[in-house]
Length: 177
Image 1 (cartoon, rainbow, N blue to C red):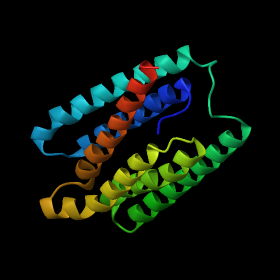
Image 2 (cartoon, one colour):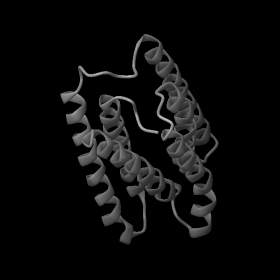
Image 3 (cartoon, helix red, strand yellow):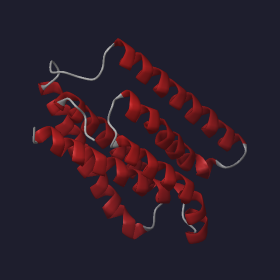
């Protein structure tokens, strides 16, 4: 369920920790005031996990990795499609006057793109993160409407928490090998 190589576990911790920090930050766009300290704590914890994963990645850079020419190419194609879909969807939402839904759209694209990433990188556990982020993105708009919240205040903490939990699990995996 975890990456075969320590380097890949450390890289997953670094990348997911960084993006968890970004999602907790996006959630600070307009949350209820009592949430701010928790969102800030999530951002700080995320960057600490990302930095720890990054340090381990650097220390084990010459170790084995799942990345080779074919894996790198496949990963690049998936990320390219993700960026294109995210950008086009965000532009369309803004043009149609639904800018508040952009965070949910981006989370949806991130969640969906993690399914093929899990396959290409041979990390089955990432499927769980993909499913949870996709579900959070789909639930965010109706929850935000029902609670009179900004969509980012709903999807940001949910996505950030999933990414942070995955990053922590990957960091612990890397540290205990």
